[in-house]
Image (cartoon, rainbow, N blue to C red; front, side):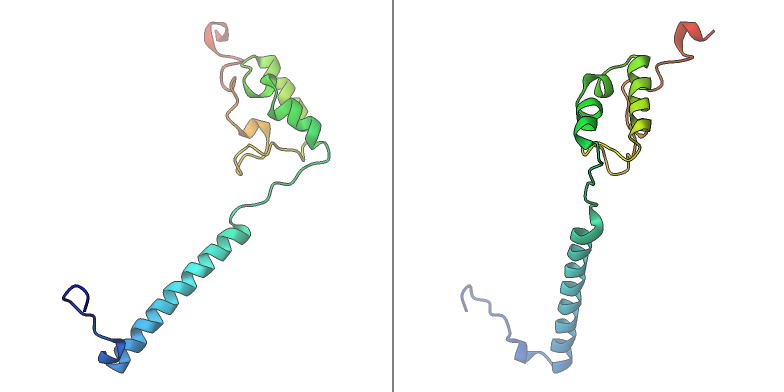
Length: 119
């Protein structure tokens, strides 16, 4: 005994208690392994590049026009670009965002019939 207390060896427990403990531990380990395998296999979908990914990244994903601009012209131009490249998306977009318009566009809701000119 190291610290004055000693643990009873497993042989001190009745056989049924030892079996029950072993089964619980095995079940927990199996569930943990399955959860990790599921996450690694299908939990995060791999990004798939489109045919025009390089040019799409430059104009849509990294340009001021499609990431920071609040002008209506920028928004409509980027929407048109997305229509022309319907199979493309930015790798930096959240998994749920499939198109430019699905995202948090800087000018969204601020152009069109709004403000003083809407009356």
